[in-house]
Length: 236
Image 1 (cartoon, rainbow, N blue to C red):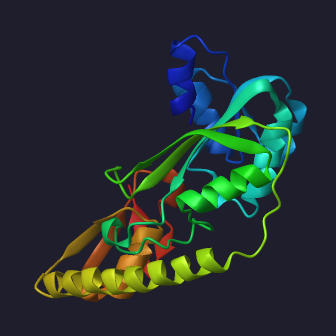
Image 2: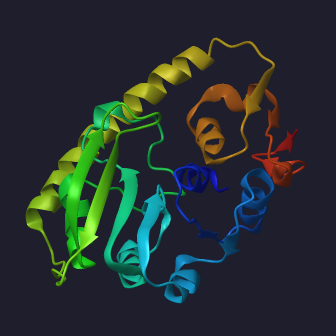
């Protein structure tokens, strides 16, 4: 919606962006008066060159091929350009919310994993920070500069073993949270109205006994009004 771009513009930057959602593009214009192209990175980044900064804020985890996106950013940046990104951090399973593996996230990253991905795209991290107290879950923020080489990405047995241990801890942590949630919701007499007609509500309906007590689903997104989520209509 142009929220991040507005901050950069106030700091004196010339800004632009792209988003595949026509609604997001319209909001960027209406709310912040910022021109955002309607399209994907693959469509829009090849049209740019000499950029000082490319920002991927909670974007790479949604992409089918984040390496390809980083290579496009590399080509669009000037010689001294940098890429700034923030992604979910898969190193502290005890700190993530229930249902962390949501449908809209295709990738999760460790410090070593995001570093290898950047190196494969021709970047070297200048600064990497892990925030364990982010709003929803731990995140990794990285600023990386262009380099003259790309390091091939191959199988990593150590990374695979670390991922397995992370998943085992995450599953146990997730099950414990949902068990406690089910116990609390079993005491609710109803009726129940749910705020938000998204994937997290779908998980709530799937993992708890609240389904039979729900009278409706409320969402501020007009695109969802009148739609059905597990036999419940979404309204304003």
